[in-house]
Image (cartoon, rainbow, N blue to C red; front, side):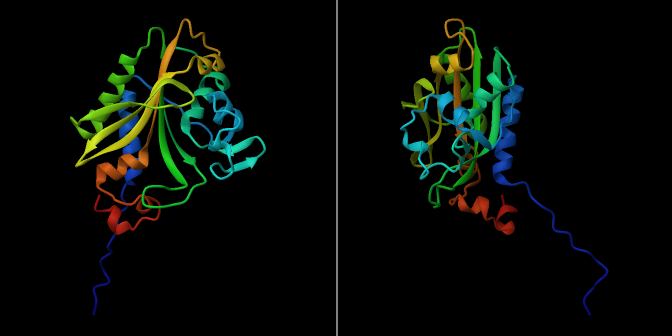
Length: 235
């Protein structure tokens, strides 16, 4: 007869993406950043116009964005938090903000893409903020996450920063993109109600899911959203 007097409890396990988000957020809290959370259902203004995304830009198309109404979307990027903090909540510089959140893209799912995923947006605005502050911040984060690791910065165009850059790290035998960043565009500062002749700032955004894939050696992003508990417990 089986022993029915004992109860076997199978405990849960922290999700790898959540673990990465908490790690990054706590790192920036230790550097004096505040945490801000924005809505997942966002206005077209904050998601696109505020960030200088042109009216004809393909990212606005229904093939890329989930539209709720003519002026409302499921946010495609956590960068919209910049407008929420400065305009909706009327918080002005100096600012050091980190914002985790879920975002949505109308795209096909494969091993490296999901239509729903998590981002972390950070931005700093103060007097005399320079590119050196941005590079130091990014290098500090990557060293915290991965230890001393080769890193490269490449010029890249993002509407809301100027100049903009993509950051890649040497991972095993490949160079992998891990985040985008740049100096906040003066027009975006103006949209915030901030005088760009007095203040400057930088912003960066990274995918929390991609970080968790690298950190925990997961090969397929779909494993994060349709997880097998037996796999998650091994992480």
